[in-house]
Image (cartoon, rainbow, N blue to C red; front, side, top):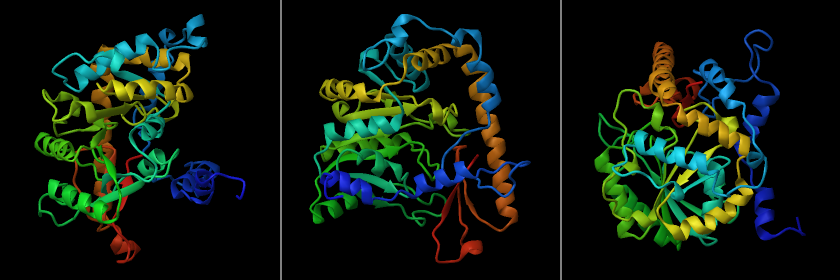
Length: 369
């Protein structure tokens, strides 16, 4: 590694357990008939409950379309038709009080690419970010892919209140800021996933506003990842885009993608929204390296256009099947004496396996597959 840069050497020495597990599962995947002893990947969020429904929609004739512009260089922020439709889609589904501006949208090949490209625009090498934990570990990997960053964790307690464990509070965030300062870390951003990964917590409007006000007091960017927003079953979901007035709109940024709610991880489409032109301008330049293929963007445009199918078929069916899957899993775990944290997001179940795996182990998140 002597001929590599410092960052290159760091990347070589880093080990990502999720990547190793994925490779192992892909090589020896479970199949009920052909490979019953294979691996079931419980480490990646893969919503497969509506695969047949989505397959039928994506193979309709209106998806099979090509024109020269889709095979040529295009706007690095995304093709106009997709950004226009994404703005309409997010305005409606996120209940935005005003119509979102499609010029404030950038489309990339996945939310990981968005975080990866956004990091060098917001952070300097060695800067830090706050994030509640338990958390999605790829956040640190994605944000730190191009430059070394310092995650400052905000531990969530299982004993906050008896009826609401693992709740995030502003006091916890303040303590995280103090911890970062004592470590000499310049914290530039607060990263929140709503609904939360892996606890399935759906943040209330009151808590969201308090978090945004906290970030504004400390001049922090807020990167709000809402990739599970359509997978909330029996609780009202509040998007950051639904607020009439944000404490600091220039530092509030939104991410959503098709991987989780639509079960399209492999399609690699992520959508970023912000009103901050100082973010959009350099990010659109870096998006050149993270673009989606033109035909893929057109397919997503057609999918988001089909509101009748989304509203009346896909979204309600997806929530119904996620709910049924969650109940099946929770019932089975309870029969084994494994306690479960009840949440309204269908993708995740947070279960305590210490009784069967040993008391030294922490709680384990189980994914609805």
